[in-house]
Length: 150
Length: 479
Image 1 (cartoon, rainbow over the protein chains, first blue to last red):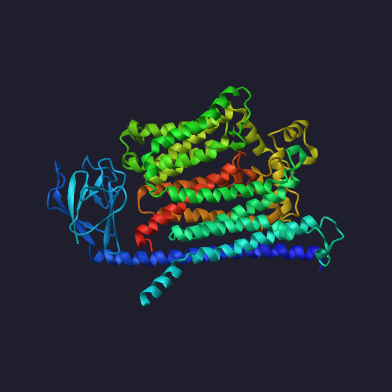
Image 2 (image 1 turned 60 degrees about the vertical axis):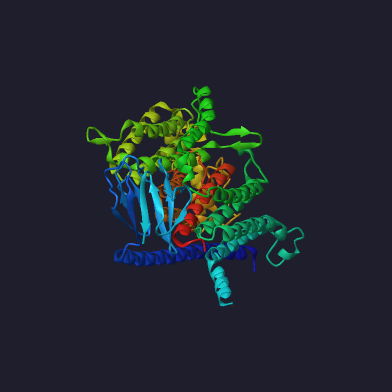
């Protein structure tokens, strides 16, 4: 076999391998997309059936917008804040536009501050890093205190 | 007992098999290309055929493959570290990036010794330099992932990032002011010891972090707008201020530092992020009009911009009977020569390419950095070029997907911004090399020579991987 022929084979092999790799990646990506689409369908179904938990206002401080006893539904991913994109929107001046995030995993709620000015707390413990919370714990958002219930 | 078995199968299933399987083909591709290059180097003597290839005494195939094997080992090391500490991070990004940076190393190995004397060559150790930078980049990518435990930490210091951007640009501004009369484009390099730092590469990350943090806080206010200016609703001045400051950085780099590429990058990033953050088309359209206006002003004021556009309008097809003025323009530094020779590279590649190591892509100046795209075009051909653009597209797709999956707004904006800046950079320099856009001195991510660009792009990938890991851990737990 002549050298140029060998080199031609190498070149063609390179192109084939390059496209084989692209195909492999595209297959991996589509599989991934299908999986998350299926998961999204599942969680949508669950959300309609029932809320995963509730936040009940215990102490609303000087706020007039929320009253003690008010109940908010929690979904798997919940954000609390003043902005219109939050799951729970509280238009109070002492609440930042993105204040607190709560999420539910393996039967435990996690609370984390979303970069607010007045802070988020679980049982008076600042929640800069995610803090696990259970039913009955007091979640404080700014000065509004909620009780977490199932 | 059954529990232990279950746990071990869980661990086996949790292993990043997808990433490992995707790394196999890139490794094969890189080994194949390197072997091809070594054979070609050894066979410059025309008497040698494949049958007596084994008889060549100094065919250094095994020695020659060692640096590449080192690179593959480094990638494998990153894969193992990701397996131990960041199991849930995105699995497709690393193979894509590894293939691109591997191609970059090979191309630099190939180009280095062939760079012409008039362009400052030959540089025999260009490839090993690139290899060192890439390995350093992989380390920095992991370091970014370790340091950035909580991505929101970045948002807390957004004004610090703004000052960082400004400070990084300051030396170039001073240099630009002192040389303002010459009107030539500067390359914003800082010589610190033996390192030539190019601050614009890190500036772009700072700009993205600032925009993400800033839009995260002020999205609502910006989206509503508070006072009217004709048909346009503008946000209050307090919110507008920092944004205008950021645009001023873009303008500074355009007018004083004379870095067209950086200015274009910052401005288009600003367009993308305000649109993504506020969802208002009017901002994007107004900023686009402002951009056209600024470009026009810049064109009439700055000679370097005029030269770039003149090169764009230059028609080389009647090369046989150039007028003296055209000939002069073509031969002049910064004129048509670089771009036209780049096009010659692309054209001589054809559909299948001349083959790695078998072309002659070294005629244009700065072939290893600004014009690298044309070298790939010549040696890999149209087919290979499509594949490379496909790899870029897949990286961008992954980045935007990480953004849509992310749980909080800041991470979303950050991932979107970083991906946009990556995409914009690729598109600007690729289009420039094909004479569709004025040529600017920004490197092609991962593929062209330049340590800073590689480090910056690895930081981007590190942040994206960290965001994807955090998202998945919040959703499903660490195991």
